Length: 128
Image 1 (spheres, rainbow, N blue to C red):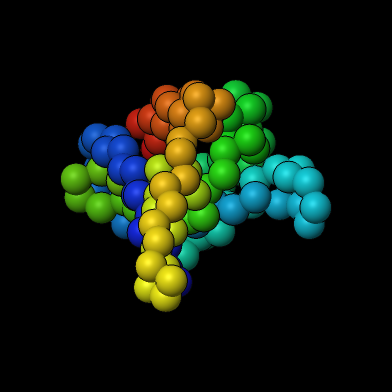
Image 2 (image 1 turned 45 degrees about the vertical axis):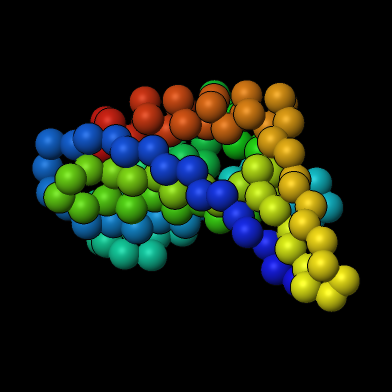
């Protein structure tokens, strides 16, 4: 059995060519309590203000906390930011024996959270 997932991408243009790669995840064992941001590539001192804002921006958290994502990564290069989000919804579960496919629908609440998250990330990232 495997899952065919859908990855959503959002380009955010920027003026300067700096390198960064940031991974976000939900915090909390049973209930989601917040978001943790981890810098994978780049200078810690340079990106510390952005990491702080990603974890504390209330408008962003309103949309990210209910969102059922598997992976969320922010990548910065010469062209700007790329937001890569792999969501559990809008994916397909495929099994060989017995052969079946099940589509996992993207609900209206998840769609609203996804669009709201992208809107807030766009506003936040264009300043960095």
